[in-house]
Length: 439
Image 1: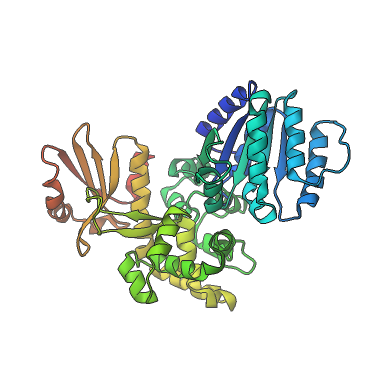
Image 2: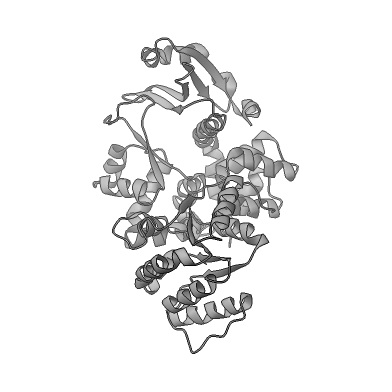
């Protein structure tokens, strides 16, 4: 699959590169695994010199030996003696950068926590001494969100506020997924929605599907749910390192949220334990869930729900992790039956977020969300507000449009509209066939 999107990121990276001709620039690319951080960095460096160093789980001396070889491929310089520390490697690179202008990419930078945590203080010291007299465009890439956040955004850490830019690379938006599918002659809305539902816009997952010519939902399930599928253990591979030894509790919470148990009370009643701390860390430290309140709710309102931000992880916990016994016994046909049975209910929730993203991308509204009252009464799937023009859109969203009754929607919106006197209301019935208007 060719390189798609990331135009804004490439523009900013180019500007930073030009600035680094005068003095050093430090950039951080972070985001979940498979989102295309490394691909973005390599796409950016296509037109100029760069050195790429990957922080593998090896001893520091072994890594440094590999790094020296990589440096020699780009710059034919004499290295006197053995360099056994990253401090020595970084000092050498800064010395080169005093004469040469180039980009240095250090991938999986957070792994130094497991190899030698002192590296961060050493880099900070060397960077502070040399930044203004070198021509180095330094790019750090990190996949463990909590560690990358700690390294660069925790005031107690040595590299705090050293980065000139921190990019949080996110999955592709719906319009980009649509563009990709049209390039493969599968631009219909049903395929687009199922790609969004399964991959959530994660480039690596889209790449796997399109390169294997998998476009129908049934073939997606066959590919996901077969022996040796790269997706079967994907949730574990992504998150166990994040969560550490307490991953079991976090996984149980995420499984419940994916199954529709979206309030703290529901989760605690099933797990029979307090989970407030876990929910806070999942939201703030790991950025895996988000807290949603009814649009227009007061900041201290306790009416709130939790959602898994990542569509793929939501799907993985709902259907693969939840049925791990069937996975272990190879009974994939059972899981497919469950998915097909639950598809309408599950996809209905995803369709709501699908339209919320489409509405957000129009840039016509400054507030977008959903609405409900205490006890889940008078739920409205989508509310979009433009406070400047005083307009408010309220929409009911269903796979089967014939089941939508606008008169019921208008009745449910009465209490909400009391807070928007003078706003022009619009009520919409939305189904998948209406998405074309917003693409």
